[in-house]
Length: 190
Image 1 (spheres, rainbow, N blue to C red):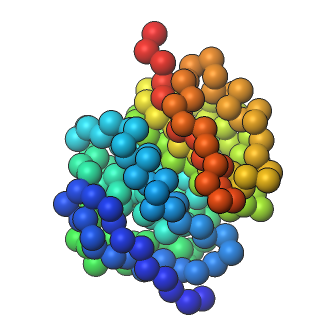
Image 2: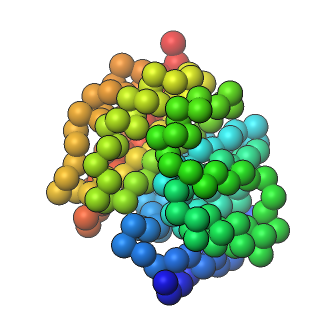
Image 3: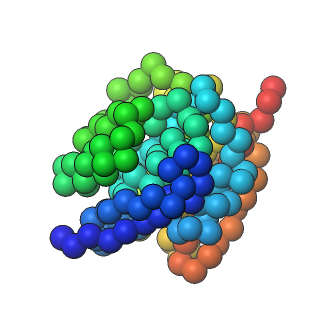
C-alpha cells in the first residue's frame, strides 16, 4: 500500500503532517468537513473522543491538537493501527489508546468511559452503520455523550440512522459535499 499525507488544521499541532495508508477502505475526512466539525463541536480539556473506523486517525489528531483529554481509536486493520501509532509517536502524542479490533466487538465490550465526541466514519461499502448506531444506543456509550459525527456515501445514505438519534439529539448539520453525506448531532440537555 502506498502512503498519502494530511495536514492538521488547528491547535498545537497545526500544519503538522501525517502519513496514512492509501486504501479503498480509508477515506480521511475532507478538510472542509473537519473545519465544520470543530467549529460546531465545543472542545474541553476533560473531553474524551471515540474514533470508530479511525482509518487515518486525523479526527483524533485534530481533537488532541485542540486539547481533548484522550482519544480512543478503533479499527480492525492491523496495518492501519500500526501506521497511526507510528504517526502519533512521530508527533509525540501520548494521550490516546488504540484498539485493533472490530468496531462491533468494541461496542459490545461496553467500555466504562465517557466519550464526549464520537466519530463514526466507516468505509463506503460498510452496510451496518444502522446496527452500530443501535448497538451504541443500547450500550452505555451514548449516556454521557455530547456530540456524534458520522459519514455515509451520499448515494447510499440511510436516513433512518438520524431517526435513531432524533429523540436525544439535535441534528446540527446534515449536509452533503461531493460524494460524502455527513451529520453532526448534539445531545439535547434535559
